[in-house]
Image (cartoon, rainbow, N blue to C red):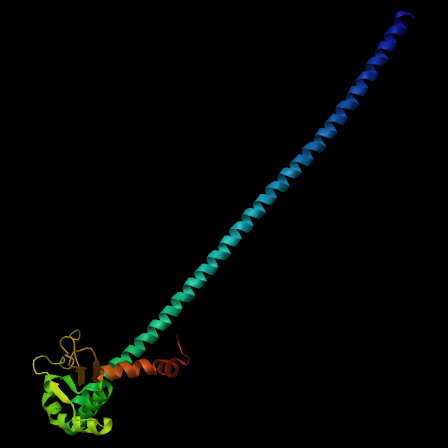
Length: 232
């Protein structure tokens, strides 16, 4: 084999090796590009998933905040409604308290005097004591003293007992009627308070106490009449 043939074979081998190398390089390049695209797609999908998860998390947080804010606003509205209802009822009770003064300041003492007698008899029937202490307003003392005997006699007839001893306190009196100058002072619109001699049993039968009892008893009905439903 001469030099020309050797050179020719070498060139053929070089072309073959080069072609094979190029094909291999091309194959590696295609494979690498495919792997890159797959990895890039996986990274993109992973980022999309993170973004979706973050968006869903924030969306849930927004929804929770909305529910909390709505609940707070609803509760605040309910509180305002209840407060407004309480204000109306308080105004009614205050108006009723003022009306009580017209009872004890009636132009005809006979009406209030009879009421005092009835209140005393009620207390005696509750206490069922042979001797009791009575306290009234200083302004009512003369009216109370005028009805003591008749009240004791009426009680005795109803309870079928002897007339009780009624000791009227003339040192300490119930507070006077409400003052326009100081509405925070203790006051009494009228009526009496009776107690057993040892003070263990007390019957408060003032006009204010009677109003409180009636108001508490009728409160559900009052609410229903005013607001259309019974509010607990």
